[in-house]
Amino acid sequence: MPSFDTIIIGAGPNGLAAAYRLATKGAKVLLLEAGAIAGGGANGLAHLSYNLDPRVLSEMGLPKLGLAWADSELATTALSPDGKHLRLEGALAERISGEVSAADRKAWAALRGRLLRFAKVLSPLNQMTPPRIAKGADTPLFKLGMIGLKARIMGAKNFRELGRILLTNVFDLLEDEISDPRLKGALAFDAVLGGWAGPRSPNSVLPWLVRLSGQTLGVQGAIGLPKGGMAAIGAVMVKAVADKGVELRCNARVARILVEGEKVAGVMLEGGEDLRADRVVSSLAPKTTLLSLVGARHLDAGMTTRARHQKSRGGAARLSLVLKALPDFMGANPKDRLVIAGSDRDVELAFNPVKYGRVPERPALEIVIPTAHEPAKDGMHRVSIVAQFAPHAPADREAARKAMLAACLSQLETHAPGIGKLVTSAEILMPYDIEDQFGLPGGNWHAGELSVEQMLFLRPMPGIAQYKGPVPGLWLASAGCHPGGGISGSAGWNAALAMEAAE
Image (cartoon, rainbow, N blue to C red; front, side, top):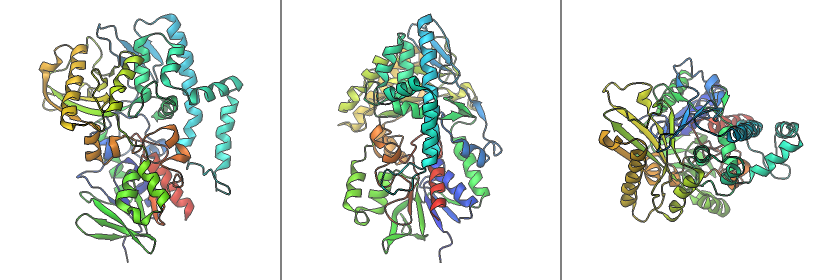
């Protein structure tokens, strides 16, 4: 007899969240991690927190286990090469410091209020199993009805406005409201961060609202930097699951999910070891789980086709620099989140060549300097950068990697003259490197593009949007499931709740 009733593949935030929730309900859980340490994308990919699930934070007791914040409401500085920066303070740029017209301040205040209000209406969806749109489906009508009621309570004008902007694009939305290019650039950058879309891409507002529905310590739209970096979130989650008796095995890569008698029987590790359990939960990308671990022979033709066609293109590169001194971004506060975006047009221009497998001349950058908050023991400074956009399938990978690094360093030099002389090491991960290192198909942060046709009851794909896999005993709990990516744990927690409801 197996000693575990549940095996969870992948010890990232979602796998850890699912393990904790199931263990609290009496499940005997084995958590398998291919890497040397648990944490998934919190270790070296994500560098800021914007949507850590409040259920995960409180019920797992993460603050009591040591999770603290260097800054729970990080300010953003929109950098300008002439030194005339904009400093955006508070959640979603509540306050702006810098030369901005009175008209733009007024327009932004109104637009900001609408965006946060709309995102708040949508936020309960993050903690729900997506509805099944089928006759006779067991759908949480009461919860959905309450969300609809909240939307209607906003008033007819706001309800119509929500409907209008849900399917529009970020570029048009900002162009209609604001004139300052720096402000539009920073906002457009945020809206498409981590996705395969430029500001002009259709339906690019909805993923932005999903991002804004997240929170840090109860503040909607706030961005946080944990003490010790994002890896600290994974570390305290590991402590939490250990306290509940979950067994964690690292360096344990699953080769395939065992299916016997048309139902899950356990997993086989790369070394050939069989581990048996009647329930297997995968927090890996759905495409990887279905096509590589389960295999097409255990799926019907329609499911196999949908899995193969699931969109999963990554458009962000991750750059890590070590500097021998703190760089000077023309007087900007080094503790801020620094954004080089120029304008919404510049963000769009950075996306255009990537669609054809080429590197942009001037990528947009998000820059965080963790050592400005917590000095390193060696006295060096670490600079963490997300670069938008980068090709996920260039003709020549090595040439693209070198060109992307050169383009990023050029952008940094323009906004922090002399920074190149401070660099002692530079490592860049292109989307294909992210795929290889973190197991995310196409290097997409969300384990499947977060787009209108792959959200809610269509995520990851029709027929398996309620976390229950296509093979009895298989459950899906990754960022590729609803509600999507980020270091949140939401999909894992939701999947555990769905398993409880099915028992």
